[in-house]
Image (cartoon, rainbow, N blue to C red; front, side, top):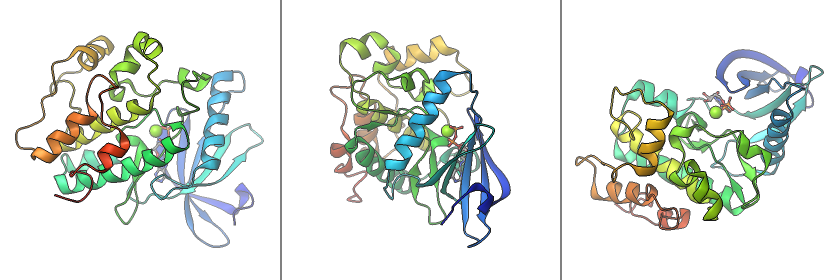
Length: 275
Ligand code: ADP
Ligand code: MG
């Protein structure tokens, strides 16, 4: 029921990210609340244009209760691209972790299930998200977690489109993606990379800080890349349940061919409410 941007009244700024600001807005006619993401596009940078076009194209096709819904996309005269999305009242998992530090396993297991169902849907459409991390997982008023932000997603398996140039945050990136030689040579398709990122996120929820480097360390790119690709087998705290430990281990299997698949993990006791 939103015909143009003038139907919307800006209420608040609710987020900032790469090249975009997200506002809380209200439809003047119905008074329903939405989130409006405004992407400032530099008309001279073709990659950004391409990334935005990709995001709009993907979003228009996506319709799942586990993925943040995009209701409309508008161009402005200034050349910005505006996405009207469902408003996720409780913000991102990143914000949640700033407040709650670490989450109980029953909450982590609900996050795991929601993200896996979102990935199952996206992967079924041949979409690799490519940037699963706490700030891209949003929570609504009912406490449901949904996947957002397709800025670096790409359509199609194995095609290295220009979208891939806009790399996701490296901290959550899988070893095969960090190690581009294996990414090329081993035909990694990217789906397993989303599962790896989910594993990092869930472990972070449990330990309360980014889990692949020691607490207090501010690693540079090289240290981070080394710990992702060559680090010792992951330390998962002894205080975690056997179900959580086994689940995270399946996500963080370094060899993507051996890693748990979305369907396997959905049936795992940790994600399937059976423990
Ligand atoms: P970017 O591509 O700039 O990272 P995101 O789409 O991830 O943009 O949005 C940045 C931040 O804005 C998110 O981390 C979140 O805090 C907030 N945000 C984005 N979309 C929504 C939404 N639909 N509802 C509520 N908050 C949102
Ligand atoms: Mg984001």
